[in-house]
Image (cartoon, rainbow, N blue to C red; front, side):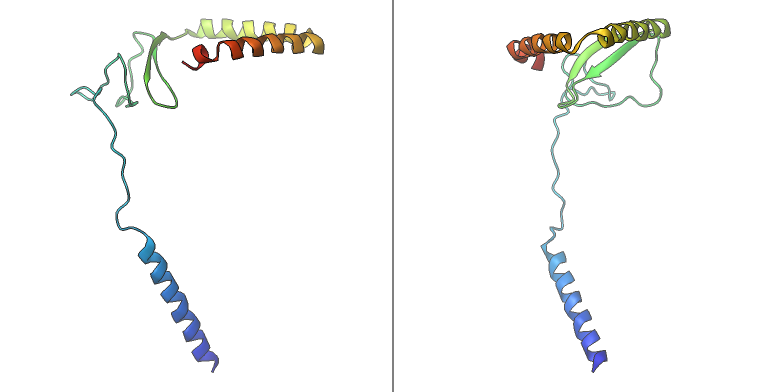
Length: 130
């Protein structure tokens, strides 16, 4: 009798799996993407790129520019000058000096500064979002 129960349970499980597999659509939906800003050679137009298409192979660093894209929409924002290693070290040193000043400030000073910053962000939120 235990043998038949095992077969019945397996058959029932098989039927449930077959039913669940029938619910899955055979074709996966796809999304059409506007690639109208892509040139024939595969590169993007510089004005208003819509999709980030990474270049094939290594990029040239001769022009010392960094291409920037908006993270949410992949819109092309423009090229900005790349920093040299000496400039990066200078910026890190500036940040360390600023952190030492911030660490010496009191809680009251920090709170006042953060409130001023909050007020500025709220008043200029549309500009910041753009």
